[in-house]
Image (cartoon, rainbow, N blue to C red; front, side, top):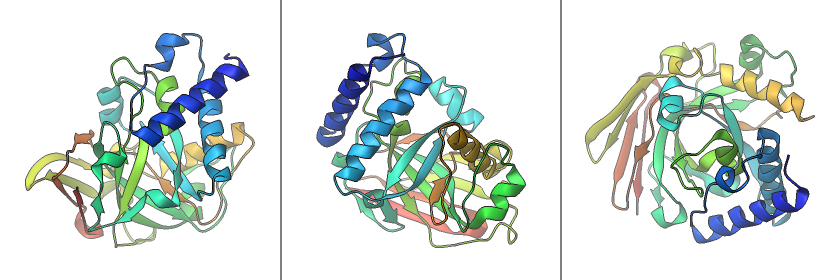
Amino acid sequence: MLHPDDIAAIAAELAEADRTHGVIPRITARYPGATVEDSYAIQGMWRDQNIAAGRTLVGRKIGLTSKAMQQATGITEPDYGVMFDDTVYRSGAEIPVEKFSNVRIEVELAFVLKTPLEGPDCTLDDALAAIDYAVPALEVLNSHIELEGRTIVDTISDNAAYGAMVLGEVHKRPDEIDLRWVPGVLSRNGEIEETGVAAGVLGHPATGVAWLANKFHQHGARLEAGEIILAGSFTRPMWVSRGDTVRCDYGPMGVIECRFV
């Protein structure tokens, strides 16, 4: 376990990296004894400082929920981070690339809750009952820690590498569509780069919502009505640069487009 002074120092480093869009050395290289609980404490300190500064929390992201993402990162268990209102874009947006570090795109579904959801024994059926609707989403990854050799401790500390999300326009209730078979065909500048289906996320994309409710219970918290839950990618991350146009076709759930400027 890390000393509270070390947790505060790392949180400050990450806040500065976020402000300057920089990258810091791996936490686990400098603090090899750091644990997952330490990393959530670092993330929590950063989160609370942002809320105190006036940012509004609108939801949570779940990461590393698919084999594609676990293989891409070498990390084998899910994690979560927080999302603030000023990180939410709509389809058609122009996104300033200089706001982020190590910019990549992932294909996901997001869920908006109509009722609170609480562990410790939350199931997929419980999660589906609490969901108001699903909406297609792209996640913009934003990594402030050097990528080579990262562990889950590094990624959790860095707010699970969350930068922003781009939401589509089609909303579907869980009983309107088989969410497992929502496709994603991801293109950059007109060329298809990644494809997948939402079942790649733990067998059902809402399974992660139940996982998150149970994880939150361990931290004495619950998911609240109105929160957006970004449920995890079912493709590998795709690198993007200034000038790139990104398009993702979700079949019956429509298309998302955005451009990095």
